[in-house]
Length: 315
Image (cartoon, rainbow, N blue to C red; front, side, top):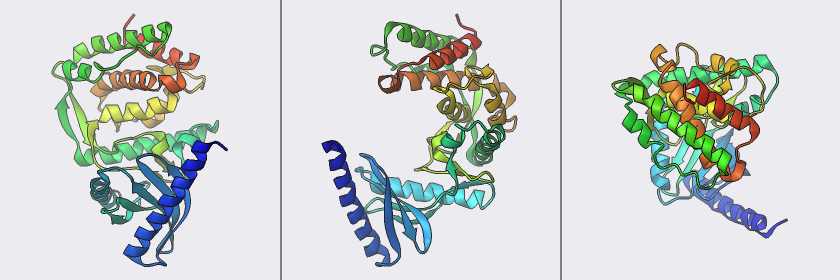
């Protein structure tokens, strides 16, 4: 076992003890019990255990703005819990908040991570969970949506700072071609309006949990307004970009899964031909460039980038 891993385990144990002390001080010695560390990062510690007799998740934020993060989380989860209720679309509600130490106690989401379910070859199960995830976004989006202009200058600023020097020449050339293709595609957006809303700041399969009958969004830390098409595109790109699944594609993504997820009730017809394909390409480009050091650009990813570039009508 490496020294770095040993040091991290020791550090996690120390944090767990301190988190348990905070919980005991707030609720007494028999109300909350931390049983397992799920994730230990530089900015947060995620734990599993019991709270008031039910299974719960504990998240301790370790940044200078931890108190503010917990307060935003409390406000956002309260809003979503009230509006979603106990139907098929849910959030893991907040059971308790301790802003001063930056500690949140959350309901335990029942089921399996959607990112794992989507690796299954069970077509019916995949389709069901994709419909649930698309339905979640379609249910939440209208609560705070508004129309905003989506002009080319604004869109081009979002990719202007990308750097490609760390990529090998063939990958760099492809990424730059996609960038230019997106810039040309966005030229037709002058005066176009698109739905912007607050739903989930990191709407991706890894942050959704499903038991087959319902889907629960997790890791919501506050409300951030984004174009709805961007949220939908981010989810599908996160699902497909590195996947080797061999099936018909649309803008470089799996067409059958896209049809299950992005129903006609999710995106207006105009956006399905404008902002949605643009954001698919944009999210692909961001993901490949920013994740290149760890994942490179494997064959299946190159194929998806080329397919997206081709359908955007670029050379």
